Image (tube, rainbow, N blue to C red; front, side, top):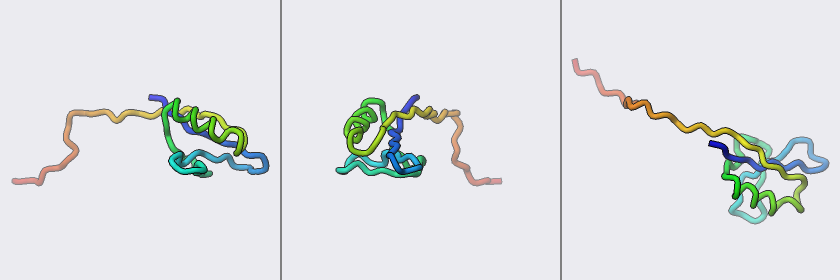
Length: 82
């Protein structure tokens, strides 16, 4: 499954920033990519549109999000009764 991050490069700032939260005004940003908000394409495009003029050059960064596989085995251990 492909999801997106919104990356913003401001002039004068060396490190890029990523969108962290979109439920606040103004949109909250972070320099730590691990804290960036992972979102669907339409939400990411809306975020880019809302910050494009005010914060610098915005771009979508696609990432691959893996779905956990179900093996059918229980991961819970039962106590040994022997």
